[in-house]
Image (tube, rainbow, N blue to C red; front, side, top):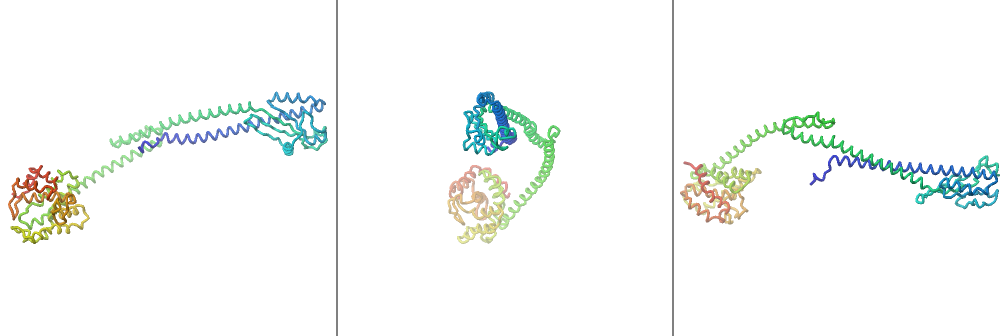
Length: 467
């Protein structure tokens, strides 16, 4: 699922490039639109200025020709030719003072206009939503004006108030903006498609190829052909993969050799450990004339039952190596009790039972798993499934599985073997005994395994019996 969530190189690269391109495109479009607007405003303002100069020249000529009453026609013509909604002539205070109040073709300035005229600069108000622009262009007295007006040079004689329609200019700007945006989007599409191709050819495909070839080269112990890659970077990667594969193969060969040596060493250690544990377990046998090969048979039969029970390989090895020490505590029991041919007294039996605790105390302090398992077996192999055993009175699965197996094997070997205090039992008697003690003394499942595989276990016992 995490793998599916991750993006491909192509998506990541294109995503980042697309973000950059979109930002760059927006910036370019904004700059272009602002530039167009500035250019548009400059053209309109320049045209208004030109119209105002034409009006000024026309009014001057009308005044000199003494036909000022005809100027209305002139202003109408100017309006119709230049997409002007209205033209109003504003008579300044200096002219009003000189010639009197404005005529029907002129209007007197109000307070707002007076504030504008004081600045002696063109005032422009843009009304984009109405597709209009209004400009008030002041007329400043120059040398020629002084011929007709008795004012100082630089005096504001009046202004022309022009209200102009800008639909055509706005349409021009919008059309060109659409063209620019469409061109940029087309350019972006071309770049993205080309980027897809570049990423596919020079990144995605070579990357997949180099991964596939790296696996094949590792399996076949051959080098990747570095010349097939067009980019220098992937050629370097291929060379690095070849070097890495060679290094890995060399290390693998070294590791195989070391593993072989380690396996041999482990086998030797395991064999030595088994022999040592058997030897320790047989210390007690040396003191007894009636238990010859008992330790080896317990180890063998415990291992067989552990396999049949379904324990894993590690546990099977544990019981095979640890079970020989099940009676190690008997080294603490006096020979007179250990080898007594007659039935033991209660005190002697109590002394004999203490071998479980002796064995546990000998082994319990080790931190090794094998010896800890051996300690559990020594301590618990005389516990009974119904809780009536010793020394702790454990019940059922409170008893270690290893001790439950050894308990069955220990009694089986004792019954089928000759001891100083008894003759071997018949197979029928042994079978009857285990059936009767199933669920009492012994784990029912282990008893079932013993009875089902009795022939195999008897044969294994015979193979390790003294002839």
